[in-house]
Image 1 (cartoon, helix red, strand yellow):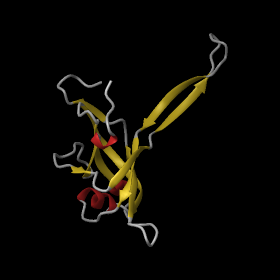
Image 2 (cartoon, one colour):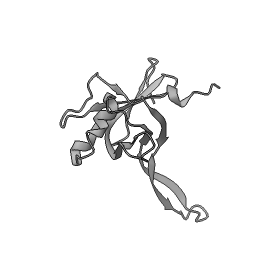
Image 3 (cartoon, rainbow, N blue to C red):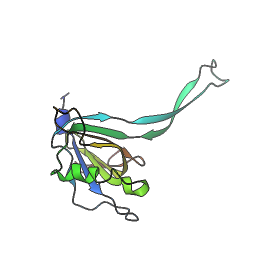
Image 4 (cartoon, rainbow, N blue to C red):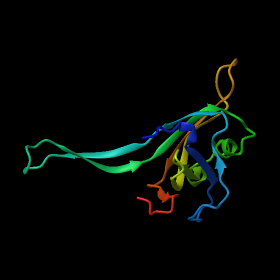
Length: 153
């Protein structure tokens, strides 16, 4: 089984227009000066024990909020970073974008509307380069597409 480098996974962003339910075709790759992208996914859970068992609680996942946390250096000339930096003083629907993630082997992608939070676009020690980071969280489970031509699952 091959191992794939994280750098091969591609993250793209695109401005969101309220009321438009599909992204356009022009994507901005979020990669320049980004050194790490963490997984900030959260899960809602519920535990319930049943009488037909021994009473041990069973864990049920009730929701999934998939999120990514890119971090690196801030480049105001990078279009993807500038799109995100431009959302810093916005609220509500003003923080929405489209997010596209292409798996590292290029065989599958996920696309959906997302909310950007915790935006840092230029911060850090006086002797250090400016930092960039944010949290990009899908608003619902993103649509999966198999890029090899077979149905996605």
